[in-house]
Length: 415
Image 1 (cartoon, rainbow, N blue to C red):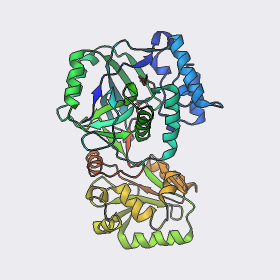
Image 2 (cartoon, helix red, strand yellow):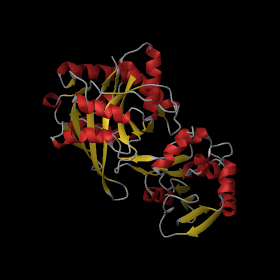
Image 3 (cartoon, rainbow, N blue to C red):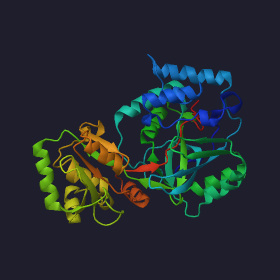
């Protein structure tokens, strides 16, 4: 079982660093140069300067900057361990206003396995090497891994909720309007109740696979026992009413005439094709259905798989939950089949890309930047869990857990 502990955090000191609003940043891998510059302009202590460093030796620069912040008292280490309750009030891409509740703690790093910690998506080597070099330099986890656990009675949050009646320790609203409120809970009885609630839970990584695998590599590199054997996580119950998953859509470009004809043949043979007004695959459940648009017709269609046996044959040897996974079936039947994309193409975005919304996917095709788009349905949380329990990892970006967790709420020292 996963080992959950309170966190003796490194954290910003508002009296020196200023309000949390000016200090946090989105995850490093969604920040472009313009946004980085805007974040740095907010505060000399904005976390982006350490989490996404620049310079001839960016990792040494990150370490020096974090050390300077500690010397200046802008970042301090707590005297006692605590769990940090997090509430995120947000409006999702579907327009619904929701609240997601979780808590920040440290979790002992172990190998993946049943009853401990499971991944749910494939990862790539590039980001892991970058994050490992940054971890070596700063000797801290700068951003939390987002993981899920089963807690049908919501017992962990029930232990923390009374403390959220007080004013939050910090508050920050991100550029998408998500209001993040954070409370420091050092009460021993509450911490014990949280640990008890999660004691038998298996953790499923929702976002942050690269960071978790980096933490494993770093722990093994140092060897022995100590703080480096733990990693910063935010845990959210699978049953939390504010937990939502949105799809990430697939885009393809530089297709040859032969590939286009092959795609047409596969679609005609294996799918029912219907003209639609919107690029909408419909609700989750039932046989595979995807929205489709290409640069030739420039109008939306819905493709519905005629027979699940087609997907079963294409994914022979895979467990049943994986063979029903929309992203896996699209990858096997359409992307890797007639369009001839490889795992390497998908990993390195060669002829391949992603879109967050159907509107964005359609615009990218109609502009000519991409030749075609497949718009997917959201993957139900229970299906994510079923695939992970079957021992499979989904294709990259099969899920889009919204909202993202900010970087800079707290840090986890590894020394």
